Length: 280
Ligand code: MN
Ligand code: MN
Ligand code: MN
Image (cartoon, rainbow, N blue to C red; front, side):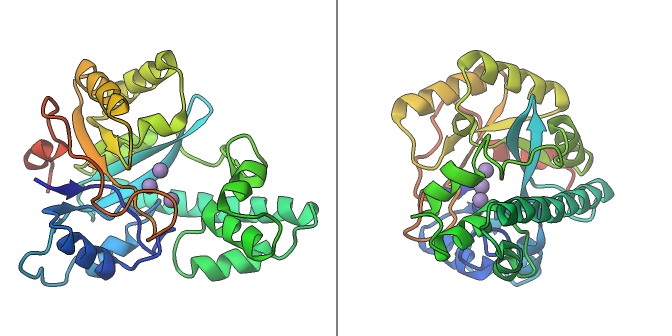
C-alpha cells in the first residue's frame, strides 16, 4: 500500500491547500494520506466532509504536535483520532496559544536586534493558520537580513538560537496522552532529525513507549538505506509499529516531494494495522 502519513498544507507552513495535496496524492497513486499540519486540524477539517472522488486516497485525520522531552523540541504525529474528542481539542487550543505567545516573543527579540517589523509580516503570512518559525525565516529572507531559509535558521531560529523558545510547549507525555485519550495513534516523527546519540534516542523511545506511543517514522523523507535499517531495527526493538511520510511542505523547496520517499522495510508492521483498534 502506498501511503504518505506526514505532510503540510497552507494551514500550517505548507505551500499547497488541502485540495491540492489530495489531487497530488491521487496523481502519485497513494492509497492513504494524512495531512499533518503543525498543531492544527483545520486543513483536514476544511476537506474531510467533501465527497471522496474515485481513485483519491483515503484521508486519515492527522496533526503534527510540538512538545518537549529532556529539553529538546520533539514532534509527535497523531493519526486516526476522533476529531471531536475533548482531549484533542483542549490540546490543540493550548498549542495555538503557545504558538501565538512564541510569535510575540520571537518578534520582540528580533525587534531588539534591529530586525523590526516581523510581527506584522508573520501575522500576514500565517493568515488564519498557525504562525511558525518558517514564517519568520521568510520575513528575514525577504528583508535581506539573511541569504536564505537555512541561514535564517542557523543564525536566528534554529536549535539553541534566539528563536528556539521551548518553555511554552507541553511535555511529550502530555501530547501522547491527548492523542491516546482521543482514540488516536501517537507516532514519533522523524527520529533522525533530532541528531541524538544512539543512547539518547533509545532513552527518548523508552519514555515515548511508557507514555503510550505506539509507532515511529521508520521512513521520513529522503534518507539513506543504512538510516532506514537503523530506524527499522529500533522500531522492532521497541515493539513499535512503523509509519512513513515525506514531510512535504512545498514543491521545489527543501525536502522530499509528496509520496516520493521509499516504502517501509518488509520486516516492519505498518502503523495502519492499528486503525481498526483505534476508536473511530
Ligand atoms: Mn514545518
Ligand atoms: Mn517535524
Ligand atoms: Mn512535518
